[in-house]
Image (cartoon, rainbow, N blue to C red; front, side, top):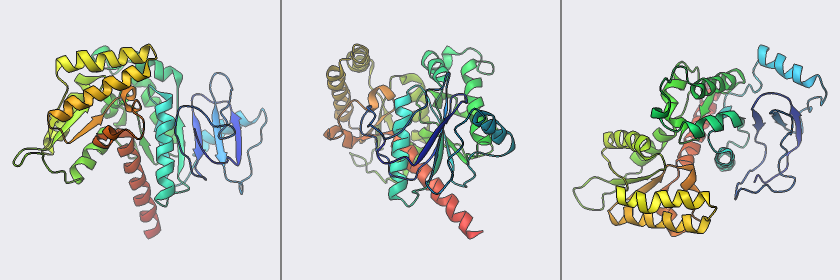
Length: 331
């Protein structure tokens, strides 16, 4: 999944975190892991992976390493660079790693080759998010376990030295406002990044005198639709969603096909759903769902009409890193 060579890697016991620094180009092409590309620890229950440059001394791989990491957490941050990015994993671990790949690939082409990063990927959180995908599923957001878990991830990333936090997950985005409140560092919102890019793209309406139409495809349609409708309409766009008939005959069967591992069937149903929106005059379609995002092959022409929110978030993160480093140089 990641291309390149890891210089030094050591596993340390610590709950639900992956910590690294990019010193090489990464590229995620599919869900399989290339041999010798990256090492994941098998420490139970969870683990930390520290990645360093060859010029740095590798940590001591001993029983005392865990206590050393704990002391480090208490006294100072793990990564002290001004452009350190903290990533909170969501429902899909694959999506989280895909985002990291996008981020690091962009960083290598935009002059941010040494972009440090910290990834929190917690199986418990993934399970909580999977069973609590909408606000209605959680009657009391202030005490719900998923919200407490997300807040704990923010705290960990802040204490670890993250200077910016991102959350590449369509489900956890629902609670962005609650968990970003009081955060001491910038906390980029994936949906806001999409809206900003659409606003800055100077799209032209298909029909003269009409608003630009933006389609939204999501498996959590009500929550996602409300967010994008409000944000995009404020920017002068019109949001177009699949009607009830289209959802029942394309989106729902596509998810059912995925459950049966019928990838080709799900892919064809997604193509139909996209064509229906395009026939209704949309300029571009936001694929706001991990389930739908990677169904089409990279060379499918329909993807030219789609926006991947993870791409928008990665580009915004790189812009933040560049701006931060430039501000540091000017001090």
